[in-house]
Length: 236
Image (cartoon, rainbow, N blue to C red; front, side, top):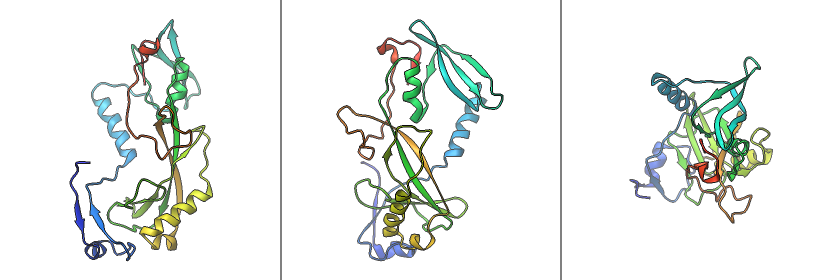
């Protein structure tokens, strides 16, 4: 992948990470990062606001305002007042993640999204000091992350779902995360999870790909200018 790496003798790694499985055969260091999603989003909002953007929080898009074959705005529900509002614009960018397909349909175009749920479990103890990835092809329960407030997060799964608004984490997924994660850090079984949550990935469906192939789907980014579909002023 062209990124720096270094092989670490297992005995040296175990001095830094005493909770790791003592039977590890090899270890490789790579430059990885923990992302604080809440901070990232608010940093983007504050930066945009400081540069002249107007932010409308707590609005749910209910419809698009169309004039002929052109999108000219959005009709939103203000979740605080309960009132419907219209926001006009020269161009609308649909960046709604797993809801992108739903909003694209409001414009009369199709975007092939596979909403894929990734379940994660939170342990009320910092089990590791570094991000630990299991060395195998991407699979369920192959990463443990040190997070703030002295907790660890074990993830993740990849379940293709139908509706991002109606998803409950199956108990089997949490059991799987414990089983797989404890292969890396045996103490995970001892402490378990105090809470769990899921994020929904807006994965692009590739033509010919099985509908349930969430793990194999690409994590790339793509821009669709829907003028090619006959709709002006609308980009996903």
